[in-house]
Amino acid sequence: MASELQTVVGAVVRSMRAASPGRDLTLAQVSVLKWLDREGPHTVAELARADKIAHQSAAATVSALVDRGLVRRDVDPADLRRRVLHLTDTGHALLAERRDAGYDYLADLIDQRLDADDRAHLAHSLTLIRRLLP
Image 1 (spheres, helix red, strand yellow):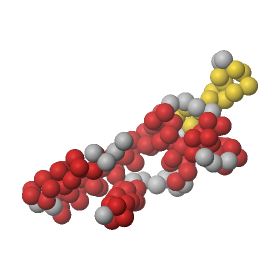
Image 2 (cartoon, helix red, strand yellow):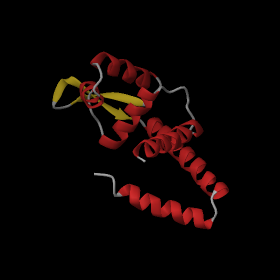
Image 3 (cartoon, one colour):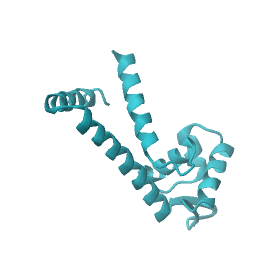
């Protein structure tokens, strides 16, 4: 059952990602955007530690996002040597667009493929799945 749940949840997430406008972003870039959106401004070093990746990999990902205008680097007023990363308005808008496209895709599938009884079962299943979360 655990294996099947992992497979199904993974497939749903992948299908939602596929429905979202990619805009030629890598998964690493999307991950950084989502992390900054969720956790707020941080440094490249903090991002690298959080994702358990090399500082150089995180720096390359961030540089690509800065070049595209999705992230900006600001000087940390408390330590002028540090650069703190912030999502730009364009970065926020891209994430919202991706999120909405994925949600709309999934909502359409639910409406098209599930009848009222199936939707009630799905809602109950979600309640049970939430109980598995920490």
